[in-house]
Image (cartoon, rainbow, N blue to C red; front, side, top):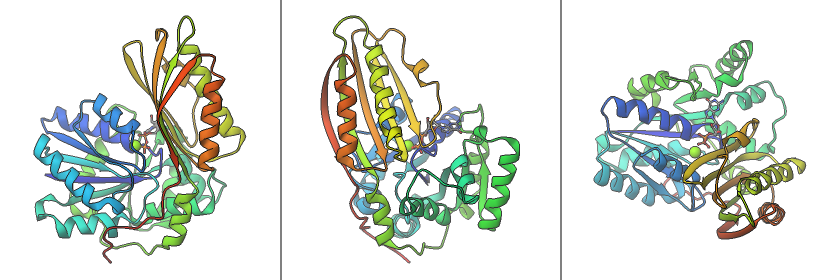
Length: 356
Ligand SMILES: Nc1nc2c(ncn2[C@@H]2O[C@H](COP(=O)(O)OP(=O)(O)O)[C@@H](O)[C@H]2O)c(=O)[nH]1
Ligand SMILES: [Mg+2]
């Protein structure tokens, strides 16, 4: 059995790539399972993996490092219930220091053949390029500290969303990356393309050079400050049209949320929705540098009711984030009910184990 640990910043494309990679492996006849991870409890990504028919278990309410026992029992549960040949474990996008707190403990505390065999870190190529050029990014310095530390500790860096960079920008990001991180393996990838993850999978299969040996030097006070500047909001919403279709109210709600976040200039880790309406489920996802075109994903006829599972990770005050979601709902032009509303700032990271 192989365990591939996948880290990297919020919205960098971890879930997308894991689903594509799992499809390729399943076509080859392998059994694949997934462990998701988040500080929150109601996860769009878990719902999305399950939509893709992937056996998925969750470690919620904190990162893998601070919930090591949960990670260990989740892995065990997955092994018993799905007998996977390959497991992908996706860590929450605000987490760093995984070599010391997850990779090494898994290797030393689990049976030899059940430890991780690779640790990939994903990064949005556009954010990485800006960072390497010293251009401004929509996050504070402490949040960018986490972004940098994630890349520093990676065994293998996937420079993702290559389709969103022009040819010369791709050359530039590769050159700048190699100059900054000499000797680190990196790979340009478009996870949305047919066969786009084949190169990554081939690297994962080549063995242990993808598993870093060195624990990070990291300032936990600064790392904790960065995490604490990010706000988490999770909730389930039922939108009911007063008459006719619920789709216009859903569009209005999402438009208002994005507009309110943008008008505050707040950095978006990601804002994600699973929309269930008219017998269909779709995922709507807004990473740091969002693209247009999402409105076309909302089914034309939803019927009078739409259910939304919402996960937002944004650099702002959590109560303010909650307030703007609530206001967008009140102004969406339909009846609504909220359930499972949860908003907070992540706690100071306090790993179960830390191995030098
Ligand atoms: N253009 C482009 N978009 C991508 C790529 N990979 C992921 N995305 C999009 O980026 C957003 C965040 O992806 P997701 O896999 O949820 O990121 P995660 O938070 O790291 O798990 C989604 O809207 C994806 O469709 C890619 O290679 N190219
Ligand atoms: Mg994800």
